[in-house]
Image (cartoon, rainbow, N blue to C red; front, side, top):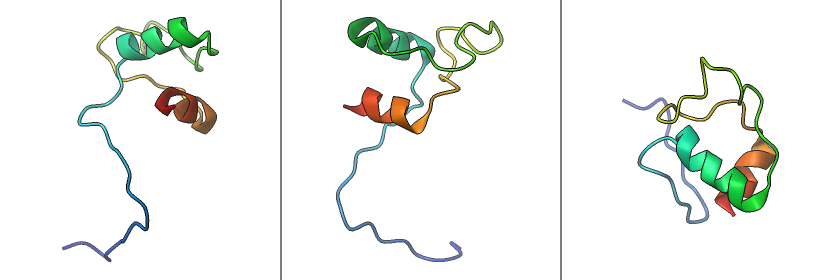
Length: 64
């Protein structure tokens, strides 16, 4: 059972899958947005891996 119920006052969208590096790369190329931390770290930058090191501001820009 949930600990408590949460109600959201506004509609929202949520992805079915995490954003992968290959998808985030297309966003970077299209917008010239700054790369997230660890973008060049081979442990975290494989195309099918979820993107990591994204700030709140980066996430907002991606969603726009």
